Image (cartoon, rainbow, N blue to C red):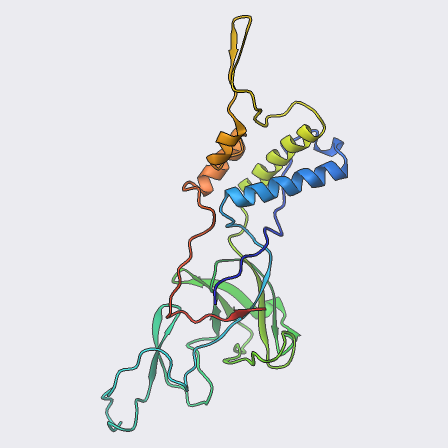
Length: 270
C-alpha cells in the first residue's frame, strides 16, 4: 500500500513580527493572505513540513506464517532436518531479525512501532478503542526510521483485526502528522509572504513582483522580472522568503523522495 497524500499542511503558524501593519488588516484579509501564503510555501518546499494528520494502522510481521527469507536446513544443533528451524528470520524496516516466539500470531523485537514516513508529531494513539495517555509512549528515531516506543511497561499489540473499524475492540490506530516539524524560519517566511499578500489585497504598495519587464523614462531604466519566470524557478519573488525556500528545497523537488521496498512491513491507512 502506498503512503496517502495528505491534503496539505494543517498546522503552519506564521510569525508576523516583521509586519507592523498586520493587525490593521481585517480578519478576512488576514485569513485569505495566510491561507494563500501557506499553501504556496507548502508546495514550493516540497510538502515536507507538518502535513494533515493521517490514521495509520500498523501491521507487525507474521511470525507463525513464516514471512520473509528462511534458509533450509538451518542446521541448528538439536533440530532435525525435517523438524524446522527454531527461529524464523524476517526483515523489520530493513533490519534482519530472528523471530523465536511460541505464540500463534507474531512477535516483535521490542515494544516499538516503526513508521512508514517521517513524523512531525503524534496526535493520538488508540488501542481497542481506548485513547492512551501521551505519557505512555515517546517518539524515537533509530536507523533513520521514526519509531513509537511504549514506555509505560506495556507492549503494543502484535496483531490487530483489520476487519473491525478504527475505535473498536481489536483495533490499533496511530494518528500522526507526516513530515518534519516546521522550523521558526518557516513561520517567519510565511508571515512575511502573508504580509505582502495582505498589502496587495488592500491595494497598498507591496514587494510582490509585477508584470512589467522594462521601463525607460527621463533617463531612468526600470526592469522587473516576469512573475511567471519566478514561478518556474520555484520562488515567490520576495528575497527573504526565497532564501528560506532555497535553503530547505535546493533541488526544487515537488515532494520528498520515497523508497518502496518489499522488505518493509506497512500497515494501512483509515
